[in-house]
Image (tube, rainbow, N blue to C red):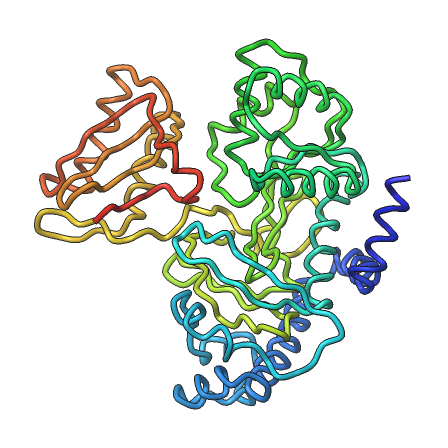
Length: 426
């Protein structure tokens, strides 16, 4: 029944999704040359379309003396001016194109970075995005209509909860509405029948911890666990594997950019090259959506630090799509020392060095409460040796310019909502 409900809903809401999915399956084994040739063609098309149909891009390109006809190779993408998040938020109406679409859907970002965005996504782009996710599911033998657990937010108002329950039923999924002992045990019982789970990485991790510590029955039918919207810490994997019998798979994207990458069974986060063009500039990701025409996203500074895998790296899964080696975290504000400034990326490298040099994996959030001071909040209980390793690393990066405090067994309650490992209150 749920398969037919899904197919009926797909035909009504996303009529082009089936054809997009079939096409994406056909491009899975394309060569790098074929993929890049496709990207070049779509880049030429989207920049010209935006210039001709978006008041913002017409003015923006003219002011930066960029002509879409200059795009002859993929490397020419660097001729296009970058688009910051602040520029995007300040010009939402002007970015929308004048073309009329048969169907558009209102999309809203979570506003986890402090600013929420609302825009209209055309049906072709919306269907492509959904088809891209389903392609990722297919790598694990999962169909979208199968029973699933959903770790996501919801509105607490009575009618909103009723509406959410109805939508969840129609999509053959269930979610956890509270972590009360009774509700949680009911949720874990339902997990026994689930084929896959998806949602906030931290919520899946916390659920795994509760299953393990309370010795609750572990799900045995899961094929896939998808973590999204938040950084997946290495330490999550041990707990999740113990509870669910599999690792947490990364689905990387954003509302405004669409799906950027999906992790294959070999553990490689393959870029969705048919739909996005990704650049790494000084560790920062820039994303161009190659499909969306209603609200073009071109050389967009998403706000994440990443590291791309080497171009000649070959994944054992057989796909040739470029790989994001690591998502190192959200770009935070500059760390203010007593006399100097430092990139917030330093915090990532401090923790990363502990993992590489001493095989110590920590979940962390660093807070700057005032100038010249940092608080290192660590989820794990630290022994004397680990604490000293951490102190040594911090001092190597900041010398005496930063006073710091290490607080173990203490992650800020709002850290996961901010989707970042560095929070500044200056």
